[in-house]
View 1 (tube, rainbow over the protein chains, first blue to last red):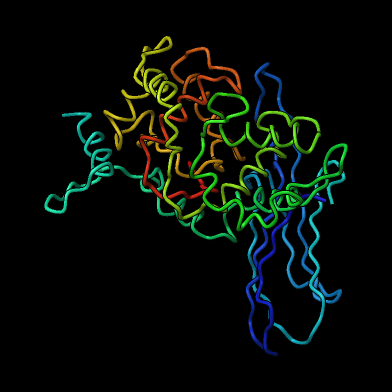
View 2: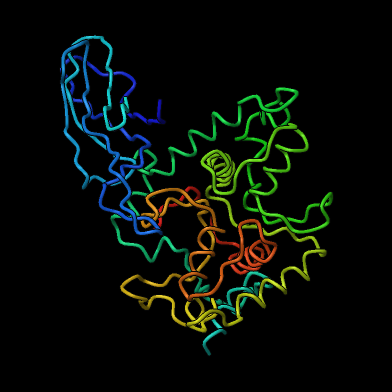
Length: 96
Length: 256
């Protein structure tokens, strides 16, 4: 499991819009760079990010090589009831 | 004229006169960045360097070595014990009888006291421990170790700073003392004060130590860079921190 930092308010009132900020450690190798020997460094990026609020997908994103290393994603959602927020990052080489 | 502003800054700290107002012209690299990059550094929820600080916090508590000791076993809460430590380094190490930087000191703790294996230079593990320790000094002024035994090393560091090297025949002083604020290939030249190390450099898309940056500069002027851990790099860092004395630590900083 790669290092991830998630920031969101500790508590929220019902109906309140909350901002969630996520930062994950990942090299996000675009596949367009070459190393010192001139060989292309193969692509290795996060492809998909999904945020679930009690099994319901509230936010998802498809990421492409243009996204820089250690991607930061921030989004808002409405707090409706007490529940669990889960975040999934999926990428190349079976990165989850 | 060119170097007197720097001298004035150092003198101002050495002996501040009540009647005189000497303007300190020294600025952290932070002030040479675009507002967007500054915003990235200011916000801990945005700063990618915080990923390494977070990893360092775990590393601090991780049991290592033959006796399964963690940093916390000896040093307790880093927020208390490590406060001001990074601001004092490079420092004179009595056991090794020479100046060492923070990374080397952490390595020594690992090998001697935790009896574990040394970490690879610039490895994620070492950088995260360095970042975590440096973070505890954030906001504090750089306060170089006043040990008189460092004088010779400091002079050697200064000699390295003003020495022209490489195919391009440039010294550090040529860019960082004489031309800060001007551009080198589109990038703004900062004054080279190590206020925020280890840094998350956008060019690297990752974390790096001051040694990595110094080696980068040396490659930039097409000189053979000193190897990681070379005493020259530590002595140069010693001179740089003396030159930056009084400026606030910003670790973990973001730099372009």
